[in-house]
Amino acid sequence: MLHKLDITVQLGRLDLLMAPARTEPRRADAERNVEAILEAAAELLAERPNVSMAEVARAAGVVRATLYTHFPSRRELIEAAVDRAVAQAEAQMDEAAIDDGPPSQALDRMIDASWSVLDRHRALADTARETIGHAELQDRHWPLMDRVRSLIERGQTAGDFRGDLPADWLVATIFGLIHTARDEANAGRLAPENASAVLKSTISAALHSTA
Image 1 (cartoon, rainbow, N blue to C red):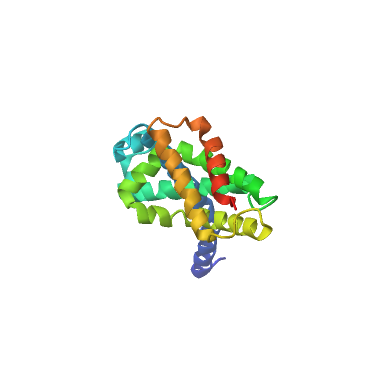
Image 2 (image 1 turned 60 degrees about the vertical axis):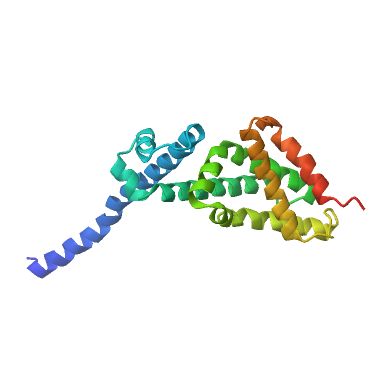
């Protein structure tokens, strides 16, 4: 016959074995909710920069309490949306293999990858700049800037890109031109489908010395 203590110990072990089965679905549900919220925020911001938290929750198919559990404020929602867009851009750069092959060709692939993500999030970029400020928005882009800096330095070492200017300056020039293309597209002065070609031509001219 089992003693009361034995039964308690065995029940405790059973609880430990069963705990992952209970928590895993909850974690998966939470991750799905976060993804749905961020996707809804990106889509709605493309239409209306002043979209409300209630509208985001409704579009994501969650109640407002769930939205505020993950993102207690609109600022935190915007920050998370920016981080998601940056992660998407990094994934696109990985897919484009910008660390491999001739630097000039890798640069073209980087521009295509960057624009493909930025074009989807043009409204988010403007909203983020107004919500969290230019300095913090730039800080959140450092992972991308580091990747591009490595590409520029590789190109300078290979003699493909001009070496008379600092790599950091050339990186800043590239990102400045990409964001200028966003502004021009938003203003209707540059067709989004032509932006990559325009950027490639402009950035190529900036990175190759005329001497």
